[in-house]
Length: 160
Image: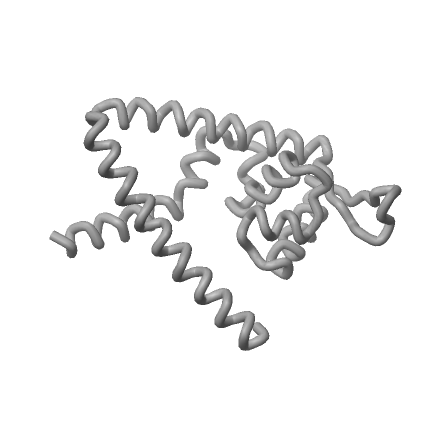
């Protein structure tokens, strides 16, 4: 039984890795030029106050180095631009351009559509089944997050 669950999870991971293809097919045009992580970085910049590399990295649970690379790509794509706060001219902040706002809006619409479709699917199950499923997924997510945290701590200790 555990082997079936593991195989199902592996299939889920494989499919989820290709979800952006489904989204791009449905929402197309502008989203085709952005990766999953880039879209979430744009989403983050559009939602948090005075977004800088540190805040974005914390929100997305990525390293500052990874965010800096994404920021460079998004700047090159003219999706974001930098600005300085008059009270803190040392720190660089980011804001969405017209293109970035378009990506932000389509990404938001994509999530809303996804949620509606998922509601239809999950309506087939009883409250009890959904509760058990939710508890298992939560526990498994916590396990994966703990593993990732340990890996990141080990990398930090090694100076990577």
